[in-house]
Image 1 (cartoon, rainbow, N blue to C red):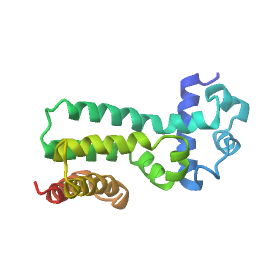
Image 2: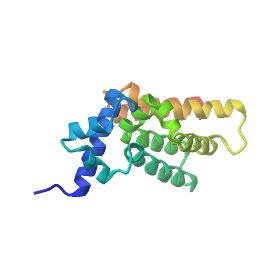
Image 3: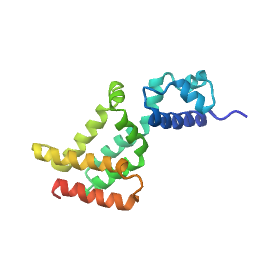
Image 4: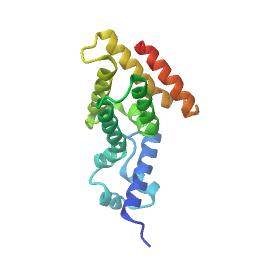
Length: 177
């Protein structure tokens, strides 16, 4: 019996994510993905119009969650500490894609996928330090948010609770909170 279309698509995305992290975006072909998946290359084209479409589908869950998180944060119901903890959780939940993005900044920039991430950081930074920050304020927000994102890759074996608590405390300290 054939697998459902969505199952094959999800499996292809998982294999692509794995190969992209192992070999890099530029060194991973659709044939590599098809071979590991055990399907033909045309079968991949059934699910993805192009290689770029496949790459976008791999990172889209991060982008969807990021848009949702920023929108919730902008509704104003979060304290700075809650915003930072939520940002850490978002990064942690999508750490495999975050790691891929860090490894492949140039390739993802060429696909136009990084501008949105920088926009989120700018908007979240404004929530943390105000709409007219000084350079020092912007640097503090960048250190706080960037540091939280980096933690999920730097300490993969640490427990979530310990890493979140230490990270949020450090981010608050960077912001002078």
